[in-house]
Each structure stands twice: as C-alpha cells, then as structure tokens.
Image (tube, rainbow, N blue to C red; front, side, top):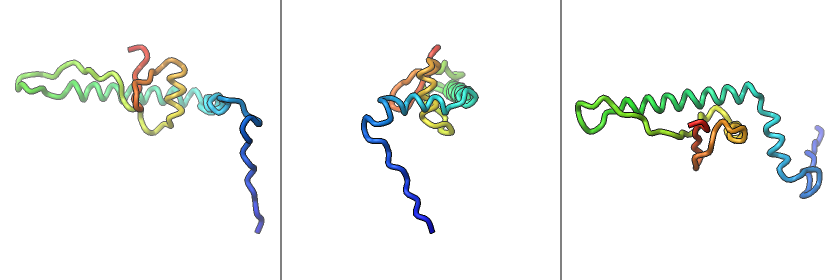
Length: 105
C-alpha cells in the first residue's frame, strides 16, 4: 500500500490573487453549456407563464389573466456558477433569494 498525501492548499496571499477562483470558473463553463442553460431557463419561464395564465380567478366565467411572473428559480440541472456567469454576461439579472429574471424584460 502506498500512502498518498494531498498537497496543502496555498496559504493566504500565496499563489492566488483575490477573485482568481471567480475568474477561473467562467473558463470551465463552455459556451454550449451556457447556451443550453439559457434555453432551459427560457423554457421554464415560458411554462411558468402558461401555468399562471391558465389558472381561473374567483369568477366562474373568466378565461384567465395575463401572467405577472417576472422571475423564477433556475432549473436545478445546472450549477449556480452557470447562472452567475449568465448574470455577469448581462443575459439574466438576479431577483433575490435564488431567483433570476431575463435581463431584457
């Protein structure tokens, strides 16, 4: 048996600069992954709108109403870093407590 020791993490101020971890995270996210995540976000937002618009109000003869949903929780299939990168690129905007909205709306 061999005993493998993991290298010690760099000490504060040694080998990394502040924000280096944040800068590296965008490099590991492929443009294709970001594109798929954005497509999944738009699809979820669309389905949320359709679901809200199809609900009946208190009156029996209403045919629904215009959706007021502007932000949703993003699909859980993608990590948080994906959504933060899309915010950084200006495609999404944070709406608080894990919710995001389209930047163009």
